[in-house]
Length: 293
Length: 302
Image 1 (tube, each protein chain N blue to C red):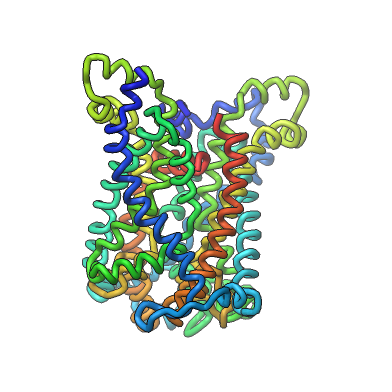
Image 2: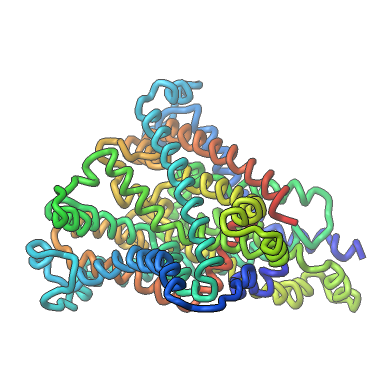
């Protein structure tokens, strides 16, 4: 029997095409991109070898410091927001709304599938202050507070990005955590209830420990996703004001295409890849241990 | 795993916590429920009002949007904003481009990904774990890492000016997650089924198509949906490889429309956003259950 499932020709036919595409589109470009980190220039003007200049530049470039800082700040704040609010929603779905949670779940999830550009443009208008106020400022003016130039200042622009991206993505984390919470066996909760565990103590000592694996992988998943933030920031603020809302992804894009510097662009991409790699190693470790089987 | 295959993950959400028996529903009961009701109403407002606001303003003249409060209904309903948006936003072209890029990508991803998942999980051979790990590593690679080499390659083999670069990139970039999800589904099926089917002399390729593929049909739909939303919503590859007006996808087109046109005329801009969301909204409501389950499954396992 081994021989049938080990048929080499069949394996080649089934796996070959996928492996070929994967190699050409992913593996070769990754190695190639790594090669770019040692050169300066672009295909039109030509390349010249620059040794480790690009890596040295990473350490002295103030823009990279800002972009790295923004990326990490965004990843930390977003991960906290996505997981905490998502967990709150998941608990609400299961323990409070119960059967009637379908409508809320459907609505809260909807922005997850909507194109990010559309949502970003919508939020740009909701929070705008010129040439006229958006509805957020209208509201503030009506309750006697002044209108705020939300997207014109670094701090408030960051706030708008976070509010939008939480609005956009939290439904996904709610469903993810919800799916994990359903897997908690009913009899465990029942027997805890019989033993006198109520509300907070039930939550603290039964629900939280049993949902730790899914909470943990949500955290890792969220970090891995938010490090790659690109669409929403590009469409909402374009990295402005100044470079204050420019993540690494956008900085890489600008370096490569606005300044035609493939070498340094690839070096930033490599930094980004290493960050994702480190986080993902943790994903697979935890997933192997806790989630699959 | 079997739970995912039998669609029960989301379908039966409420078995966990049977409500404790309530003896009376006096006034106290409703007072206790009030905070919950408040939270629910607040959630509904937060989710729906921005969309409502956008829709209302897509029907206003620019003059009205500038001069009067924007939070409520328009005084006159300018449906022609939608026609203007459709024309000026070049939406017929961008929707066509998005479809031309998405549909072939999805077909290829599913076909290649399912076959590869089968070969990696069901078939027995040396070194499959190494190959599996190499492919899975691709899940974490950000698009930026493959962007410049691919751009160079497409330029050199004269594929710029067509949608092929997008299709090729989407397939390659989408394969790792697809293969991983498919491998997970195939793991749940006993190998004996495939061994038995080949006893009568059917080749393993044939039993893949006649038995393997049909057995993971539901999973294939789920995987295809996950990939659909990832591809349809992509911006990075779209603005890099299809960076000219006649090749713009919906996302790229909307972004440049907002830059060129959005500061002048608000009604059509809001209308263009509404149109872009509308199609997805319809699709989402139609496939809601499966999408949630699919994304959750892909995420938990991926």
